[in-house]
Amino acid sequence: MSYLERLKKEFEELTERLKKLGAFLNSDNVSAVNEVELYLLNLQFYHMQRYQEILNQRLNGSYGQVLIEGIDLIAMERWDQIHAKGYDTVHDQQYKTSALGNAAICYAIMAGCTPRMRKRFRHFNKQGRPPNGWPWSSAHFKPGEGDSDQERVRELTKAAALIAAEIDRIERKKQSPEAEA
Image 1 (cartoon, rainbow, N blue to C red):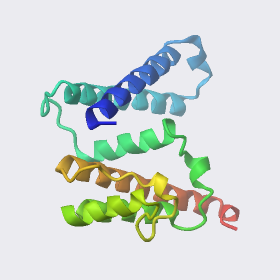
Image 2: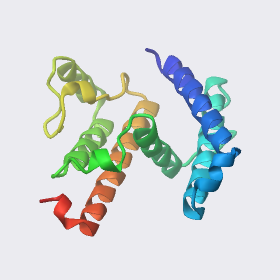
Image 3: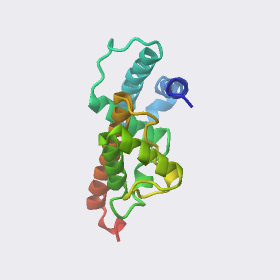
């Protein structure tokens, strides 16, 4: 699947999620949500709309009209990990060691490699040999297909979101020490 095809698919999926969340926020069911949850849902809706706007501009080739900062990319990636892929806090608690941190390191290293090394990483990964330290199967290591700055930013974004997930896992462990036992 090409980069443009992935963007289109992501835009369509995000549009559907926005419709569902918007319908919920405008329904009578929203009264069952406490004030903090409602605030977080509205914040999530705002960031989803912002991301949709950015995707739309990328699809139309009009970069630069919306300044997107690294922290926005990271927040959107973490949101996607949780809501689109199901890698939520319950899922992340299954890891007893730094699996999430190790995965982040692998993506960060990939982003910093020369084109020659990036090609080797991709080649070995396709043969079922992910980078040393990768905690899961090679099917789960998805580096960029090219060597562009855009591909490197995507890998760094994944790395940072995985670091955020690992920090959250460690912080939750402090609140519930028996979860680590």
